[in-house]
Amino acid sequence: MSAPIISFKDFSFQYHSQSEPTLRHINLDIYPGEKVLIAGPSGCGKSTLGRCLNGLIPQSFPGKLTGSVTVAGTEMRASSIFDRSLAVGTVLQDPDSQFVGLTVAEDVAFSLENDQQPQAAMKAATAKWARTLDLTELLSHRPQELSGGQKQRVAMAGVLIDNSKILLFDEPLASLDPASGKASMALVEQLTRSDNLTVIIIEHRIEDVLQQPIDRLVVMQDGQIVANDRPETILRQSLLAQLGLREPLYLSALKFAGVPLDSCRHLDRLPELTVPNLTAQLQRWTNGVQLKQPVRHDEALLTIEHLQFGYDPDRPIINDLSVTLNRGEMISLVGQNGTGKSTLNNLITGFLTPQAGTMRFNGHPLAGQSVKERADQIGYILQDPNQMLSKTMIFDEVAAGLVLRGVDEVTIEQRVNRVLKVCGLYEFRHWPTAALSFGQKKRVTIAAILVMQPAMLILDEPTAGQDLKHYTEMMRFLTQLNREQQITIMLITHDMHLMLEYTDRTIVLGNGGILMDAAPADVLTNATIIEQASLAKTSLYQLAEAHHIDPTEFVAKFVQTDREARKCNTNS
Ligand SMILES: Nc1ncnc2c1ncn2[C@@H]1O[C@H](COP(=O)(O)OP(=O)(O)OP(=O)(O)O)[C@@H](O)[C@H]1O
Ligand SMILES: Nc1ncnc2c1ncn2[C@@H]1O[C@H](COP(=O)(O)OP(=O)(O)OP(=O)(O)O)[C@@H](O)[C@H]1O
Image 1 (cartoon, rainbow, N blue to C red):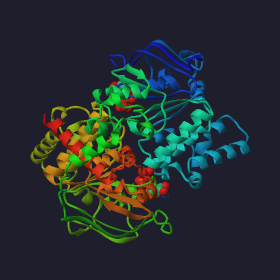
Image 2 (image 1 turned 135 degrees about the vertical axis):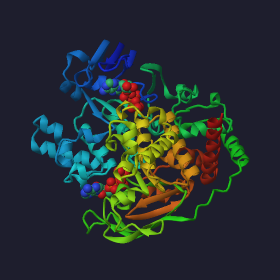
Image 3 (image 1 turned 180 degrees about the horizontal axis):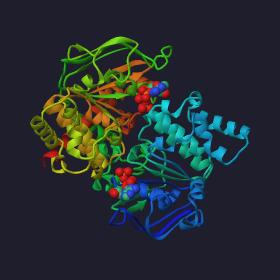
Image 4 (image 1 turned 120 degrees about the vertical axis):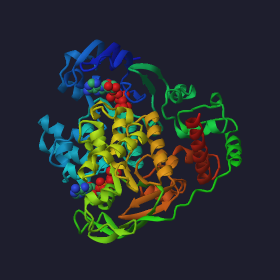
């Protein structure tokens, strides 16, 4: 075997501002041409490990380090951040932080320009990567005009153009629609094999990454490596579930059906999975589950009719869109990157004004109501809580809307405390928001909206970047608000699991209008819609199809069983 291209030897790292090391005694060798997935609970140190590879540690994030890290034969401490960034191309979760150019084209070509490459070569390379990542049409746009997923693809092109031999992806899938996520993972696989790249992927969405072959799965916990093996070995041991991480859905389905994992071969690769008598076992399980009738909601809350909007009025993004959302519904809004999901919500909340059409909320027209008036009834929660927090202390943050509306102090105290209790934040009420984790901050932003007693919440990717424990906590909390207070909740998401497991209705946006409006299991088993809206079949669909079971029935029964299992876990 050749020498490792990356080697951690008894490596520990402690951020200057922390009292304990974040990485502890890491020993890890990665060989040229390997594709490695790093998984682990939130805060276990995955991104910190990545920063040690691309040179951000210790240069931009100083701290105390012991042991050694060598990348491509050079000891980390001996190389500059510039050399290190050339050796390791990095795509971060938050692409905004990577933009430097005025246009998409400048951004993609930035590193070549820095390297003083000839114009012609630069243009050819930019065009090639723009084509590969479906960005050609966007080359003259400003990065600020792009949707979240488009930004992520630009960041990826800007890194791939460099031809680095090592690529590091930190949560590459969070803002990509399922089809783009799948396509980018397939592209990474192709490059790994054709150009003999070494690839490290940090990701919570393990099932999505495992759609392509992964050579090694490294699992971290509390700053240490607790498993480092072939994915199949780790999946068979159910280690992911034990650590509170999300297993691939098909694995959960095998467990529900009582299939002993020891009897499975190629457990990490669904297309090659072989299990004796699997068809009979899955059919028996499917026949044994009785589907319950869903609860109906038919009191209209938000009625949108013939809505029309384009940033350039001649090129509508929303085109004659009509839909009614009912009180007490839990809805997912899905669709291709750049299709107009955020735009639609900005129209509802009043940040944008439609060129035509009407919207009525609770029977009253929204036109003529200010952003503030709409915010009393419809709360919009952005993906990144840091963009929403404006006060230093938690209590003040939650009270801000009431203070702005001139509510008296005694009422504010009562209402804020009540909401803080509902959100599980009461004990932190005198803390600064900066001291909270990402998930807790998100709750504060929700609390600040709930205090206005809205009838509807719209949340953009409420669980992105969170591990299963925090994801489940957040979704349990939202489900409780929905059931107990009859708040209508609409989740904008690219996460097909989330849509299946937690929502009762899926609205698929595309071509300016609504492509489909149905139960999530029906959407995810409709091949035409999946294709049109850049969604993806989950592994459950593939498992059912391969074993001649009606996929819609199988998926619906899986969701019901999974919800019941989760309910039991909560009650116990
Ligand atoms: N810039 C920083 N300064 C001080 N401490 C930090 C810094 N960044 C991270 N940490 C600490 O290191 C720990 C690990 O963070 P890291 O981002 O590496 O985790 P992670 O496994 O990538 O988590 P996630 O999955 O939530 O992104 C955190 O608990 C945090 O307290
Ligand atoms: N301020 C703006 N000026 C011009 N065009 C814009 C602006 N904001 C968004 N767009 C364009 O409008 C389209 C819809 O963007 P929007 O952000 O609504 O999409 P989205 O469905 O939310 O995407 P994603 O899933 O990637 O977040 C995209 O093609 C985007 O490039």
